[in-house]
Every structure is written in structure tokens, then in C-alpha cells.
Length: 220
Ligand code: C5P
Image (tube, rainbow, N blue to C red; front, side):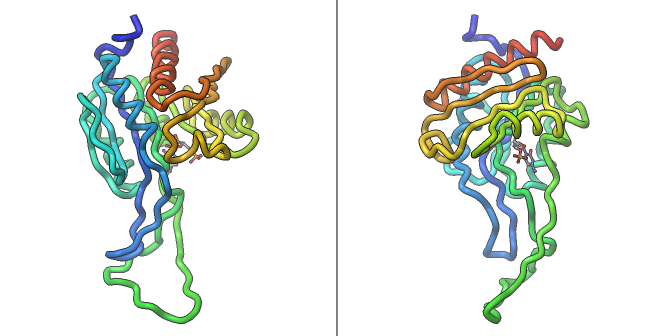
């Protein structure tokens, strides 16, 4: 039955934003609330999975039954993802990872200067692509937040990052975007696709997890 569809499966989920320090008091981040990743963690645990939730800074309670690891930067998140003990069945990258970080983090607060200053940024590691490349999980599931050409861009990420499934959402629609209570997904995998209609993030999470369970059983 669906209620124990993920019994005993080991699932790692990244959620929330990352925070990239500029100096001891400032950082670069984004508006990710963590709600979708936390909903996935809560529902996966309810479906019997052993869930590790790797979370950036968010203000959400830990879902019942999940082991939570708090991280700050993208580099911390990658380290935590690579250190999860035991063979993982599923890795779901739901975090909004900052693409860049400061090339140098100042030891002291950066003082106010002239009218313009420049920040040098360097690229962060791609966490989910690293997990996929190292075969750290049997099934790797990514998210793609798009504002246009949803299918084309999602399929590009599926291929480029070496994923098994990609779940795309149209963030130009504020009712299902960052910080919203609802979501809707277009899910793609090699040779298939499925729409998950607008519903609470918990219901959408459950439908995505059911699809993940089906793909996992076909892959084994
Ligand atoms: O390339 P883009 O950021 O749109 O890809 C989104 C997907 O990749 C999400 O699953 C996100 O969690 C993951 N990602 C990641 N590490 C990054 C950037 C994105 O794991 N540095």
C-alpha cells in the first residue's frame, strides 16, 4: 500500500537556502523557505523511510522521525551530503544552493568605503551533480525552478547533472513559488513525464515520493 511504500528506504534530502559569508556579520543568500524539502522529509518518514534532512538556515521544526543536520554554506552542505552514513537509496536535492560564494571571506567586518566596491565571487560546487557522479545514491532526484521553457531547461538539467528524475516548478507563478504553501510540478525522467497538479506542498510531496518509489523499483 502507499502508506508504507518507502519502508526501510534510506533517503537524504537537502532543503532551504545556503548562506555564503562575506565577513563575520554579512552574507549572500536567497528567499528559499525550506517548506518543500521539509514536506518531502515529513511525508517520506510517514511512508516508512529513514530520512536524513540536511537543512540550510530556515525557521521550520524538524519533521517527526527525521535525522536533521543543520548547515550554512554550500560547501558545508556538500560535506554533510557526502558524509551521510550507510548506502542511500534516494537523494533528493531540494535546497536552493547559492551558485557563488565570496572568493575571500573577510576576517573582520568590512568597513564602509567609497561609493563603489567590488566583490569577487567564485562558483560553488554542484552538490547534486557530485552525488550523482559518485553514485552515492541509487536514485538521484533534482528540482528545477524555472520561469520559462520549463520542459527544455528541466531536461537539460536532468542530462547535465546526471539525474534520474527532475521535478520542475514554474516560479513565475507566485502562488506556487518560494515561500508559498502550495506547489505544482512537471516531473521528467528519461523516457517519461508526469504532471503533479497544484496542491499543498505535503500532497505534492506524497505524489512525488510515490513516483520516486515506482522509478526505484523499476531501476533495481
Ligand atoms: O542548476 P540549478 O541550480 O537550477 O539546479 C537545481 C537543482 O540542483 C536542485 O536540485 C538543487 O538542489 C541542485 N543544486 C545543487 N548544488 C548547486 C546548485 C544546485 O545541489 N550548487
